[in-house]
Length: 183
Image (cartoon, rainbow, N blue to C red; front, side):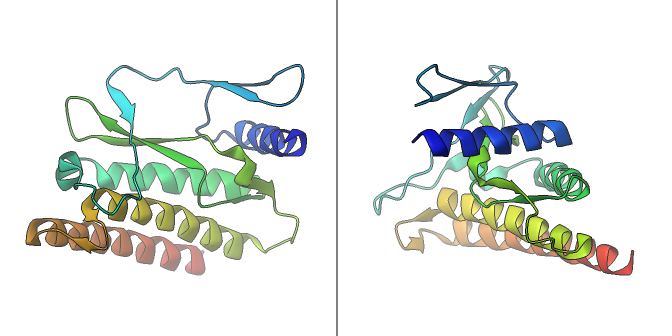
């Protein structure tokens, strides 16, 4: 446990120093068994509860996320900052937030144990690609979890929405990978 907390703290320091969107504080208890983190967000957003249950219902707000392009751009900014700081991002670093009174999506980096220095010395272009694809896989996983019920999409509406989001994400990734390759 102590090693896990220390690993998370090292990841937090790397992320914070790089300017990534992390929680404002990270403290380790005196016995080094727990990390204490604070969230200074607004009351307008709440963490999305993801479920693996087979009998879950689709999240109705997920059918009309109003700012997916903005979220993708914010996530890509995180990828650029991480790459510039020579940091490798893991897929489970984000907690996603959804507006309480609207369909706005946001995120914050919480699981910093999956952030590490680029110890393998992956080249900058490949590190950027790796980080971008990791972040996108995380977002796609969230959307699938919110729209799927059990093993399948429940209705045509969920299917159509998921495919729309997926196309939007793929177009975004294609554009940024092409720009990165030509840079």
